[in-house]
Image (cartoon, rainbow over all chains, first blue to last red; front, side, top):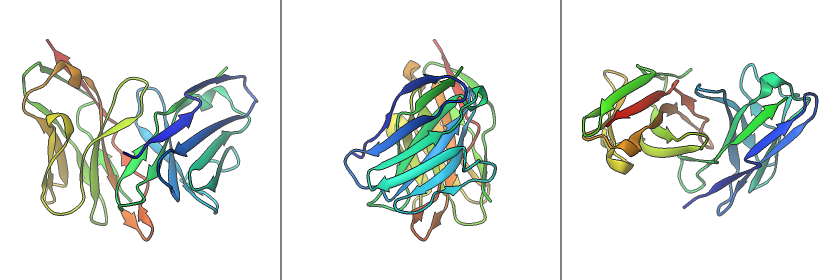
Length: 116
Length: 116
């Protein structure tokens, strides 16, 4: 089956630093990936759509200069949280669009970011 | 614009009893509907999905859901609850644009508690 991995699974950083999260499709090519954010005990919110070889499309209210997305290859998308602050602490989950079908997405296991 | 409403942030049932988790959606286009399960500190696992065709959809672990267009509902059921079903359940809706499925819009989630 289609597998999506994320690295790291957990990261703790100091306020003001930048953190990069990787999302990889392990056994398929993904031209489109999605990034979601989940605050404690809340639902997932779509942050942006990442398209290989082009600029990401951000949802309303998401700062593109703070959450940098790069989709440089068909198997890798990265999310960089720049100048992180405690309010950025969250669970970040990526997904990759099913290349064989139309509807389904395959989710990564998530990255827990804690900003001190 | 799309939205999902899950009635009841917490649902408690006895082991062996019927599980019913409610989901209503709004969408300006024919929706694609999903139910996901999330265990603590983990990513999402797809339980089932509705795209087109048969409105009663069967998923993994004995779960099923019925798409009712007239009621804009997609409620999740399981005839007999098991202790291992205790988790967070999310209903989600998506549409499809030119390149495939769009990012998902999630409900706020329902925490399912199984009483022994």
